[in-house]
Image (cartoon, rainbow, N blue to C red):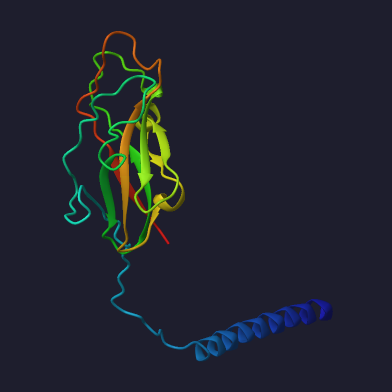
Length: 193
């Protein structure tokens, strides 16, 4: 019996000690915790990606009228070849973040003579000098193509000019002629650091 009483006293002592330790710890924790220091009224905003286009390098907007790339001969030279090696097109970063520039041709153009788009090429030559870049119309119609090198990245406030030409491979056309109409070249800027 003495053993039973001693055990229950020991268990009670342990239980009381544990409750006291938990209570004191809670009070000590509460005493060591400060009131909240609050930063109020925060706003999170993205940068602005804004790419504009111009035919003259002065008047920029969201779109400009297109060009007629006429007189093309399959296997011949890129056209036009008499206006500074191509039609001018300028893009400008009017946003507040650097832009990676891509180019595409959206659906909606007509190709009544089945011009082989894999054998028709858009040539972009940087007006500031540098190597020309060539893109098949098929690749551009399949989705955005990232422009490479210096012409593919435009810093905030910077503009970049290209001379645009089109060239056809010798086997791009079967028949006496071919044409594409309602063709649109879409330059798109994606924000980067």
